[in-house]
Image (cartoon, rainbow, N blue to C red; front, side):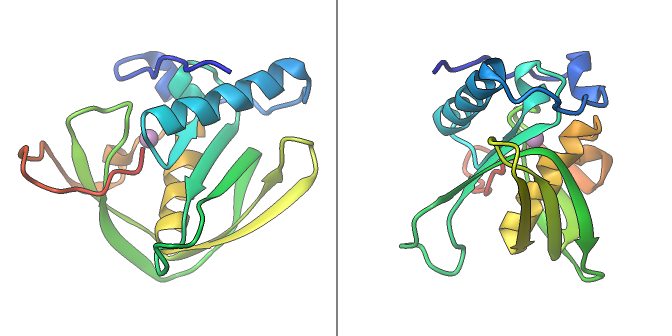
Length: 169
Ligand code: NI
């Protein structure tokens, strides 16, 4: 495993629509492992392949239970993720992105979503996500379309050093 460099704006890979994953081979497996390691080292709760310069539809997310701090974190690896259902209800919160250092933004996201995709063994996967987990998935899946959170934000600002902000990745 290796920690990869996280690319930042204005790298054009962040604005490109990523390609579907078609080969679940050794190279893919290495990519997954490197993304997990890079996310943990950052540290972050999610990472999309374009953020390490790979224009493929692959995300990793690692998050616990927001209602139970003692619950273990759960790791999700999703290739070709799609949001197939989304609640009408939306929630607004502040998020940030490792590819846009020094900025945060207030973004409205669906409160609940259903994500479909493939796991690292190419098996179909369904994840029902709510709250922060739903927010992380929406943020990461946006990366695969070349969408960054300021595109959806109601406001974006540079936080003061003493301003505590919960960062997505
Ligand atoms: Ni991001």
